[in-house]
Length: 91
Image (cartoon, rainbow, N blue to C red):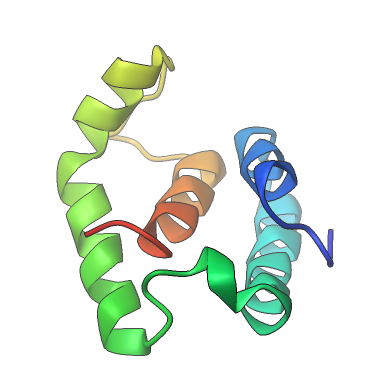
């Protein structure tokens, strides 16, 4: 999964269904920050954590808006990946 950027990174998050896939995604996300920092609005740890908290607080609305059938009360590996991905840019 390394070297992913843009839409490919987003699409990879949507396909995550296991811990191993999530682990690979998390590593690809770290590589993405190193190789494509222009894709990150929240590139510092404090900004990233605030973005993560903001997305998690509002993720029910996000999934409703995109028409995804996701149980936010019992998050999956995909939800964890989506949260990390969103934290890059979420205000």
